[in-house]
Length: 136
Image 1: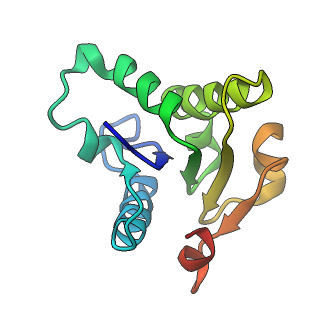
Image 2: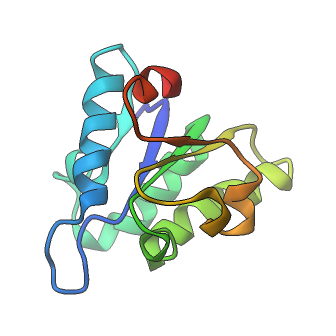
Image 3: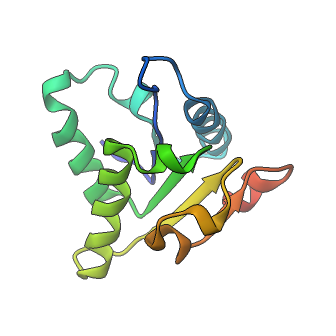
């Protein structure tokens, strides 16, 4: 597997319904992909991977990408178990010098002041006209 960007987002809510985050992440995936950026989007990239290998694949991709984008429409989704694991692990590796990388947030309806400290300290891009081009 070779990816440039890891898209971290909450796919389903507690009732198993697709979140707005997953729809927004799909827009980011399609936009960047059309420009040649190889993005890891769990629902696409894990389609052929068994559930037992999920964490192993996530860790492998986190080790290889240079950019992680947290895609979120609510502070609660940013703090969901897997999303938190992904961005926190990635940033910890950057701080420890284990890897070089960039952590970004792409937000719709979330204020920067409501982000966890780690994400507040990194660039956040609000979803609006022209924002995907800025992200690119």
